[in-house]
Image 1 (tube, one colour):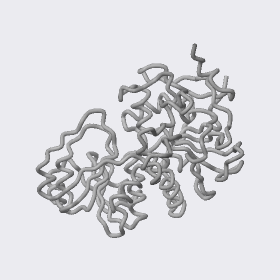
Image 2 (cartoon, rainbow, N blue to C red; image 1 turned 30 degrees about the horizontal axis):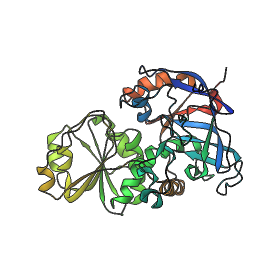
Image 3 (tube, one colour; image 1 turned 90 degrees about the vertical axis):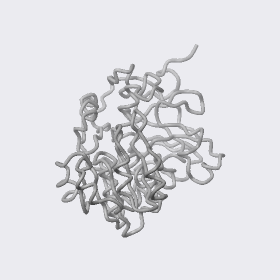
Image 4 (cartoon, rainbow, N blue to C red; image 1 turned 135 degrees about the horizontal axis):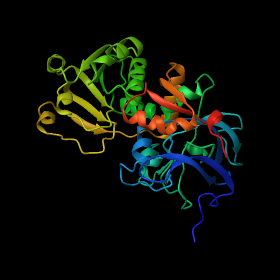
Length: 360
């Protein structure tokens, strides 16, 4: 007979989890494994709320295993290290993003692309090497193999930097891989939400010309004056879209909902690239002619490897890049999820786990 989540491991833990597809989160007692030789234990201080968390708790991707405890933008303080841990010491600031394990032997893993490992283990709603479920960062403590932990420079505030572990690396990685981080290139950023606003910040730090593309005209002032974008396009305005045709080297599309992409493809120069990083819950329509007529590419990208994630965090510290956040208490999380579903946040909720998660 299988053990309950509270009895699976020796270390008692506490957090908030969803029990069914209503997505409603409530207090949840469970357990973490003992800190092994290669493990790092984190006291969690902050955890960002990602749009993926909302999809997951409501089973909108059809793969939820309940109880489901989300959270993969996790930062805190190292409280214990194993005997073979060389990368961290007690007291270090550290973080954990979207994955906590991989096979470490496939070509992707050997190249530092653990995020594309066929056996990659997600931080929550996944099965770990020992056969138990993984639980995320809406909780008090986390035990992780040292190879999946990110070191945080002292200068980087933990609350504002937490969302970089998902939102940040999700936009940073494709900019680097697809040659969209070269100074002087023109980048379009579709959607000014959790991912889009940090995409603008990274792009400007790379020295790019940045155009924000949005359905909401009221975001123009924020995009240009607050975030530093060079221009703003209302995607529902045919005249604006026509005037911008063929002007962009690349586009990062962050929208997590169904939307037309042919008008966006028309904005690309010849040989331009549009990279999809949002995850709509329904397929998008992709006519081929617009690609053929300009040797254009539509590509995808998901987070980044551990080495690249560390590079991104160090780059963020150097350029003072953090997410724009609204810090909330743990017991506000269900209201935050409702607001997130309406895009009512500028631009990322972060749970103050360390001060507001109260164990019964």
